Length: 110
Length: 123
Image 1 (cartoon, chains in turn purple, blue):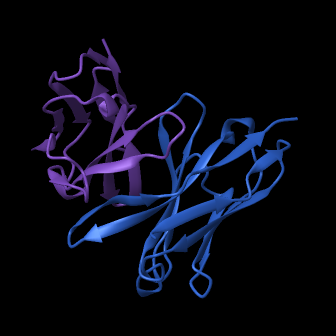
Image 2 (image 1 turned 180 degrees about the vertical axis):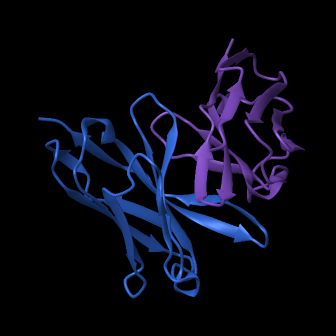
């Protein structure tokens, strides 16, 4: 079973700063099925990035995803006040079918 | 409006059963794979299971922690998905989300989420 590890656990930054979030898989995963989600308190997760680097509908271009194999990155170029939240990476493996989430990175206000 | 609305959560005793429902609207439900994801208070997201479309034989799959106890079904005529939970344990206490897994060709992700329904397993 593939395990996703996210780092750091918490990222304390100020608005306007750049955020770099890491997601590492225990073995190589398909970029086609690597996604990133944002979750704010009391809300459902929201899809940000799919296919490792494609932005979902309505997602601002300050969010970008990159990576392949075992190492993936979510970058927020300039943090806006509404970006302070928890971010999860997620992957899908087909044999057997299993969907795995990372433990999350909390981006909070410094 | 594209929407998923869960219902059926509540308090249940250990060993008991509960059935959650997910009402879909605003998109092609019958062609979509529907999943359940849960989140214990203060914890991360855990995939529970999924049911594929009729074109994919309504194939189901489950996470290890619920396999053999939970069953996912769907009624395409009503645009509904269900999660039947049996032999519930205290560790099943969580918010349960219904979500659609969208395929963009060879790429896929969970693009629509419900607001969640709370399940509490306690005596």
